[in-house]
Amino acid sequence: MHKKSLLSAAILLALPHALSAQEMIARLDPILVTPTRTAQTVDQTLASVTVIEREEIERLQPKEFADLLRARAGIGLSQNGPFGKTTSLFMRGTNSSHTLLLIDGVRMGSATLGSASWQFLPPAEIERVEIVRGPRTSLYGSDAIGGVVQIFTRDGDGPARVRAHMGGGSFNTREYGLGVSGSHDRTRYSLSGSHFSTDGIDVQKGVGDSGRDGFHNSSLSGRLSHQVSEALELFGSLHHARGETDYDFGGPARDWIDFVHHASRLGVRGQLHERWFSELSIGHSRDENETFQNAVPSSQIDTVRYLVAWQNDILLGNHLLTAGLDYQDDQVKSATDYDETRRDNWGVYAQLQLDLGRHALTGSLRQDDNESFGRETTGQLAWGYRIMEAWQVRASGGTAFKAPTFNDLYWPGGGNPDLAPESSETFELGLRHAAGGFHADLAVFQSDIDDLIEWAPVPGSFLWQPQNVEKARIRGVELETGIDHDGWSASLSMTWLDHENRRTGNELRRRPNQIARLDLDRQWQDWSLGTTLIAEGRRYNDDSNSQRIAGHELMHLRAAYRVSPAWTVRATLNNVFDRDYVTARQGVIDYEQPGRAFYLTLNYQQ
Image (cartoon, rainbow, N blue to C red; front, side, top):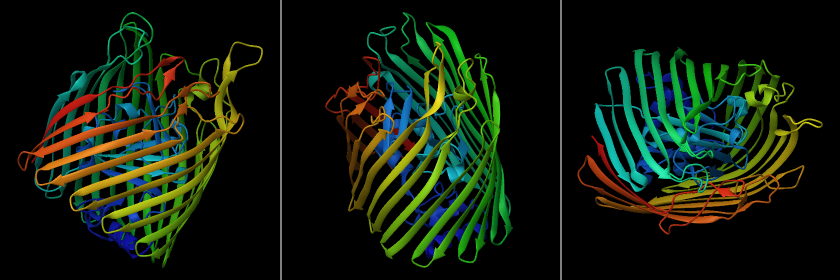
């Protein structure tokens, strides 16, 4: 940690909290908090990171969250169709269940499937996205083998401001939203709601009804904080999304899923001492799905999660010690009669960030005690060296684990309560450069994952049961670079992966070996024009590598005109050349993706 990081830490612990400490630092320098659970400038973190700010979200005008992440450094996606269909995110080639999703610090995901519902996240409610690539289990516990994605909802500051948007386009797509944010005296607030609806496309041709498979999502977000005193702040956040998404099951009538996606948090934070900052919070999340087949209810599986977190940041001279305690209680409510329907997990962790002049050293250690599988200890060590002001080299190594899901442990007649968690070791070497409007980050890494869980037939019976039988090795290189100069903005990310199942020698399913993305924008006066170019290599749909899915290239165009200081019109043309492409299939039937599509949006920002 060099002097700028120490300044951030000092602000975190010493300044009056009319704003939260981390938000105060954000006013001084762009920062992120996910890699270490403390405020750091982007150029000082010892992790591979990507930050997507609200300005970029508005410029790109994504119709779903996957559009924001597609082909970013280290990220591969597969989708069972667009607009609210099952989406898998492969961070650095790891499984989709190996990436942790946080919304305003609240842990999200299904305890039965083990993965997050990426498809239900509304871009209109997002202020910022922080992507951390590489293991973070030593700070966050289970799931963060591949990395962490944290979403921050809209926040408020200054005089009250109203914002609104409405738009529409191809596939009978409609969207609108309204929000207000600001601050008064010692209170900061933000409240917004949005709705997105589309008829979509026929996701699987020849399966089920022949109609389009639509998607409807209504969401509400809010944040509130109040400065009780110079040293004490109360805060809360809420995100709630509800809707339905159609899919093809095979019957002649309509098939769909009703969903609820919820995250909420309340807490108190403040200074216990001029060098000791503490935060205590309680959180709640829900991932609920009720499935209808042939217009008849067929299943309902809900995950309810209760969370308690206590974190302490203590300045020790030029160094920063972070120590905390996490509690998590998962409950499953389902028509399926699981052998167990709840479990809890206690986690205790500590992290020390050392400032050693040109050198920076960060070490973390965590132990989790889970009532289902016992104790797991993980750790991480990262070193950085500032060659000169604009150049930094870094190296890190860490262990991580993924807890077995409720389906793995307790599925009636098939669960295996003797399963061990999946575990990993990862090593990384990186080089970062940032000067003026230019930045570049290069990273090479290797992850070895043991005890991967696979469902296999039980000898002598018709039953299937999960076992710890698989091993995987993933090697990769990532490059992320960008420049802002004289009205031009360009960013490039590229990823090369070598991934294999160590038992069979086959590639891991549904993740491409090569990914590239280029965003190029030009701003002058009241106009802006931009394009996004995406290229993904081939992938295999199955573990045996017998179903090859071809790679694809896509081009998107966008334009915006600022009618007045408050009003902006934006237009996007996606998949300009109307490419036919897929990222997943079921058997021999593809999950279709949309062809050429046009959207128009009117934005108001006071």
